[in-house]
Image (cartoon, rainbow, N blue to C red):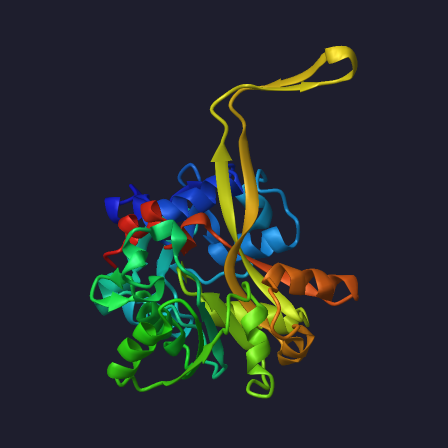
Length: 352
């Protein structure tokens, strides 16, 4: 089959590495790719496959063929369109490849072509509390934040806070706790004036308490697993999948980590004793996992946060690890994490 333009951007060759696959997913804003060996169909690669590989410490320089699942859903040329549609609905397939007996790709049915709208990406619902840390001064967005607090910065026709509310509410979350300090009155007035069909409670830091210190003010108010999110980030990920990862790993804390790629524009030198050159690398790439600013926490951790003290989420994580507790990291791709607290990212994404 000659791959049509509508699907060609989702095709990757089996010997490409996982970094290339992540970048391609980010570029085309799709989370599923067709894996080919020239004109032969090899398999399907999802962002979930790559996330599981990262969790299992598979090198991102590995070929995509090394992590492909054997049990995938595809159609055969003998299958009717009605059978294909039924299978796509049952298994929530973003697209369905049709493969002939020789292993060649005959056609690809896209969800939006058959059903007229993009597939819903919510895989499951949960009713858990969400804490939004909205007490900072937004110094990286000055001078605008001298007037307008960061949580109320506009994203198209809504504010940052409303965007976060909407994303969690899509999964069934209705209870929100918003930590405020800087321009607290303005934030509370605006959100209360919207009369949102949500249970939004504001709690004020008496003074800046860091990225976790204000959680001590919620003692006795949260008794279940809960999400924590900075007010200036957007994570484009299936939150239900993150929750399943957290529960399956029996973690006390799960950090959503964003894969970041950095290209050094210079040749690098590694030297040994007496200045002897050991290795020369020309413009190397580095891939790291960074803390995105979204977490899942177990409720007992609130009791481990000191009251009235500056205390960061990193302090809490370090304490959990020191006493032998488990901390998980759920990876997302680079463009699935939007840090709206910096001008470049805000201006790039302010229209959704």
